Length: 227
Image 1 (cartoon, one colour):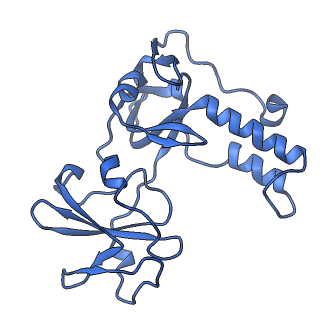
Image 2 (cartoon, rainbow, N blue to C red):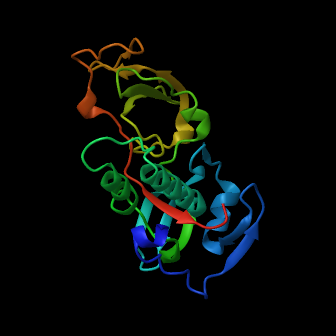
């Protein structure tokens, strides 16, 4: 059924690609270009997708992707099978005139993807904030929006915001995430440079600088075997 609905499978990894066995709950064969990332980077844990490793990728043709997430191919396949089965059995969660089409679209025509066999190398991404910082950002400042301020070691304040994704964020010039000393959740920096606190779940004030915030970055997903 999966082959019939989705057409041909992706081309196999070229036999010349080196593969390495690593340990862990999803132990298996992992291509050598991803092993260092999986060993060094603390993953984002997801109940559905499993561990997700944030990194930068360089493709075999020299294309550079500064923001990418390496995650489990088998978990994605399991999810697709389960959701397709639910729709076929009449237990789907989608409405509208074509819920099955919506489901297929999300798996075969949506998302930014890169093939594992096109990747030459992977390295930590400078745009991936440490989990120690992300854990301090929680709740919704207002509906479908979270805003906060990063305070740097030199006292500089920078307003941030995101509507959904928290994997990667822009950085102000000449700073890295290691320069951050404090997270001010549900807050922003006013035009005069002062820190303004907001009530969680309330409305954003008129002076909220939504068009001047540092925001989340677009990223690519790369599904691999062995995790």
